[in-house]
Image: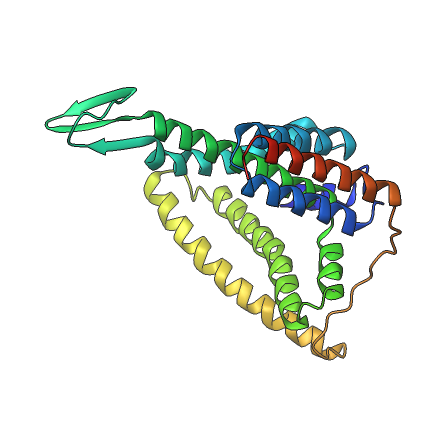
Length: 258
């Protein structure tokens, strides 16, 4: 989270208007989810990855390390789709017979799995482009401009802020426990982990109370005011986005994937 927030402010397109980056990411994300062809998913994933690495200037090591987390969850999610259980042999590509039950992989299951993987990776690449190039404050400003209720924006802003507070508190407590050999054995690790969870909860509650008191003392009236930068829309970027999305839509229509 800290790394993503850092590069959201320090990248090669940080001066580009947030509307352009969000539109580019969200429209491409919609096409990735709506399309049913491997080609569109692959093109979007490769294109957004190249845009993130070379246009935005995000280091390759950072980007591919960030990809490992969604890849892990995708692998866990595709196992039930990939593996099929049947009491009769139904043309498995690969199967294992256990008593009177077949456990194997079918052609349809393999095709569905490949679609899920490519679609998921295409969608993740779109979200990573937005997350790694657009600061959260700019996204909140966009939400205000499209008339999202202020109470929802305030809740999202506070939740985002407390993610960092909880991570910092967790790491501080973890290092203190480690220094006292709190994770020297499996039993001690479970005990220390339980204490860590309870202490983080208490610390989060105390911090929330202190934050509320500090906001009230500074004249909080129900709306958090933050400094926002002034951006200028670039017609060339708008034309580029229209051309790219139109080409993707046309290609998807030609291939029969949407």
